[in-house]
Image 1 (cartoon, rainbow, N blue to C red):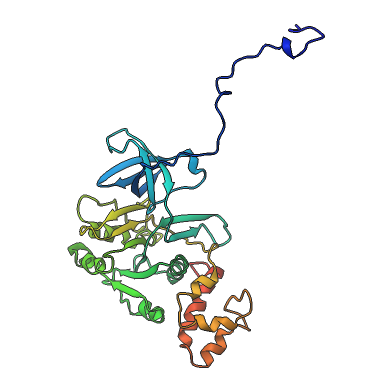
Image 2 (image 1 turned 135 degrees about the horizontal axis):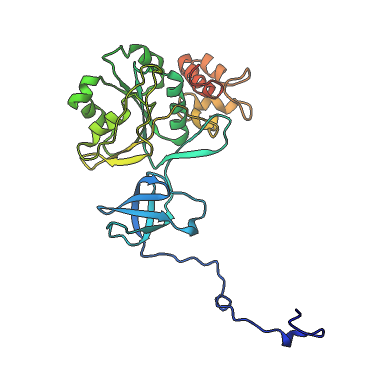
Length: 336
């Protein structure tokens, strides 16, 4: 049925009021000058637990942040209900600039980067000497990720009561790594935690490692009672650990001077995002030798200037071997 006649003009059209039509559109966002500063402790299915002063606040990301996501270790600004009471929810309206970002990809050919933690100073690479067997390629990959992110690596070797740490330490002696060797008895008595804690004071340290290497057990010993996480065991058939930590969690040291971030156990550490030039920066004795390298040099090719740099006695050949060992991890699978 025709509502209007054949010769309808604009005056015949009935105008319906639009309740939204009288509001001017704008791209100006609120400044949230009264937002409180917080520290992200953990993220779980879109909900973030943040520390504001001495209160734990549950928050969600504000829509105005778009696709930018906050991760454990981020310093953020929050508005809304900051009481920390049950069933209250705040909003994260700003993510402050990060001083470091630890990333990984699912595999070396996966372009999608996953941010593991933000603002860490140190990466503790936890590896068992036995049960499960150590995987040097995994250590190499974690070292590459640490150097790329500007973190200082710390090698933590567990279960030295089952086998000696000498072989592993010999492999990594040229890297100049800080390391701690522990055994299961020391973990039980707390002696291991005391020696590791000396390396953590005043820093934010992210812990990474395979499932079953004792990472979460060590973290529990470091942070004290009341903050422990569930631990698992090693499968006797596969020799692999079972994932018990499913999300990263920041925990304060008992002294209040330093943080430990426990991350889920990983079985791969992709390096698709890594720029080889950043890895070289971890070898200051080799950096000057790269000035004569051809453009986009991979530092592992026939005309690389580092060979001449080492031949002229400016650096130890073992250091160049160590660098190329790390740079080659992208071409080798961790189990090789």
